[in-house]
Structure formats: structure tokens, C-alpha cells
Amino acid sequence: MSNNLLSTLTLGSITLSNRMVMAPLTRNRAPEGIATDLMAEYYAQRASAGLIVTEGAQISAQGVGYPATPGIFNDTQIEAWKAVTHAVHDKGGRIFVQLWHCGRISHPDFHDGALPVAPSAIKPQGQAFTYAGMKDFVTPRALSVDEIAAIVQDYRDAAACAMQAGFDGVEIHAANGYLIDQFLRDGSNQRHDKYGGSIENRARFLLEVTQAIGEEIGAEQVGVRISPVNAFNDMNDSAPQSLFEYIAMALSKLKPVYLHVVEVSLMGEADSSVDVLPLRKAFDGCYIANGGYDKARGNQVIADSKADLVAYGVPFLANPDLPERFKQNAALNEADQTTFYGGDEHGYTDYPSLS
Ligand code: PHB
Image (cartoon, protein in one colour):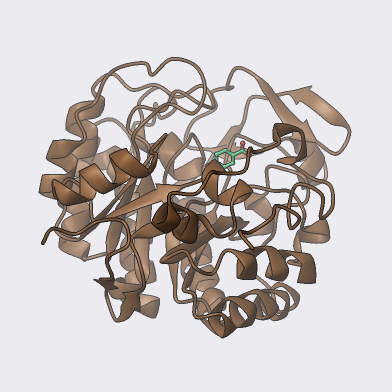
């Protein structure tokens, strides 16, 4: 019999009770960058996901780009995350933390007036969400080679913090226009050194981060998320098919346990089309498909072996018991967009489960 969304899966050294992943979702409910008991309750409510990937968590103060997003780089943050991992594990769930550096998708307001950093000094179109409302993005400062090495070390240290906090693994956020993605795509990377120019050079930073984290915590506890077609955050690339096929192939050699692919554009039109099947084939590990899947398409992509897991974002946000609802063919709660970012338990921990 072929597999479906509710089949188990072995992911590295852990067993997932089903193939439904809760996708990372920024919720801006971590004041001062510290996870709260309410966050523990929210994630525990969703512990029936085969795997939870948390909202992005900054690897350093420099990585911050939004209000009230959590960090994973100091002892206070580690202690706070322990409540989250314990609550999820107590309910039999599995949870990876997403390691995030926003790069140029930030604002001097988050950095005591200093410029956000990026591969190149190229200003993204659009505006940052700051504590004082929307403000135009600024032209970031281009990183030096020494600073890039220090950021690789920050990723490694953050992965060690994640293990101390009790996570089952980490997901490297290389998607959606944030720092690593800014290195990958030539619309935002115009460097002339070993981190810019050719596809191999633009992928170098991601590969160094993946290698360093794998050395630190073991590659079977590391996943990588990419978004080959996503134009969100003013991203574009002149040859995304060959770029991302190279990345899937080169990552394979470092043996991260999964490749998580945002297959759609989060905002605006995709700037080009990418066929994701060659990425799935080039990557020698589990493939997580994400982007607008419902139950039928999720089951189909798994039955066809085009993915091993399917990540659901908004459906999990609004339905804490999404696997049970799929099992029973039950109706789904509607998501309330007005409570996605910031606020309290309303629109966060008060979505009902089936009784
Ligand atoms: C967002 O806050 O809108 C956001 C954050 C991280 C992502 C995508 C979107 O990867």
C-alpha cells in the first residue's frame, strides 16, 4: 500500500507519527526575543503534527528584523525555549527550531541606529515592520569576508543553543529573501569575491553554514529550507533552475536530513518558473513540499513519491488538531489574518480543536 499524509516516517534518528509538518510561522509574540509560556501552549496544542518547525529564531542580535521575534543565542532564551520543547515532547511531538538571520530585511531601529547587513549594499524595495510602524528599507552594509566567517560561527553556536534547549533539530532558513537567500540569488548578491558571482560562489555561505551546523550537532538533525520561486522581499535571480539544482546537489553531499521547499511565491508573482522535481531528485534525503497544499494534494504528492513530507502553515495555525481533522475528513477552522502578527492568545491559542 502506498504512503499517505498519515503514514509514519523515520527522519534521521527520530520517528515521526505522520508526514504533516507544521511550517514555520512568524507570530511576533516573543517580547524582548524571549519565548513565553503562551508560546509553549501554542506549540503543544499542535504537537500532533509529525514535526513542528518553529517560527524563525534569530541566531544573533544582528539577525533581528521584526518586532517581538524570538532569539536562540543566549542563556535566557535557551531557558525560555525549554518550556516549549518540554511541552511539545510531553505530548509526544517533535520540534525543530528555525535558525534565522534577516540580513537586509531589517531596519536601523533594531540595531541602535546601525545599518542592517547583507552580501551587497543593495536596498530592497518595500518597508520594514518596526516597533514604530512601517519604515522604508535602507541600503544595507555589505559584509566583509571576516564578518561572514563570524556569522557562520553564530549559526554554529545557535545550533548548539538549540540542542541545549531540547530541540530535536534545527532548520536553516535559506528561504524567503533573508540573509542566506540574499547570498544565493544574483538580484541581491553582486559580490566579486568567493561569495559572489558564480552559482558555486553564491551557494558557498549556505554550504558553510550547513557544514558547520552538521559538525556541531550532527547532520541528521539539520534541515534546510529554500524558496526557489519566491519573489517575496524583493528577490529575483537570473537562472533559478540551475542555481537551485546545484544547491540540492551540493547540499546532498553534506547529508542534511531534509530539504524543505517553498514551492510557491508568498507574495506577488513568481519572477520565473522553477520545476521542483529535479530538486527532489538531486537531493539525497527527505523532501518537504510546502505551499498551498490541501489534504488531497498532500496525499497525492506523497503517494507519487514526489515528497516525503508536506508542510502546512496557515491550516496548522487555525487548526491545532489538523492531522485528526484530515483523518476524520472534518471541516477546518478559518484563519483570522488580523491576528497573525503580534497580540495575545486571541487568534493564537484559542482556535478550537474537535471535541
Ligand atoms: C513574515 O514575517 O512575513 C515572514 C517571516 C519569515 C518568512 C516569511 C515571512 O520566512
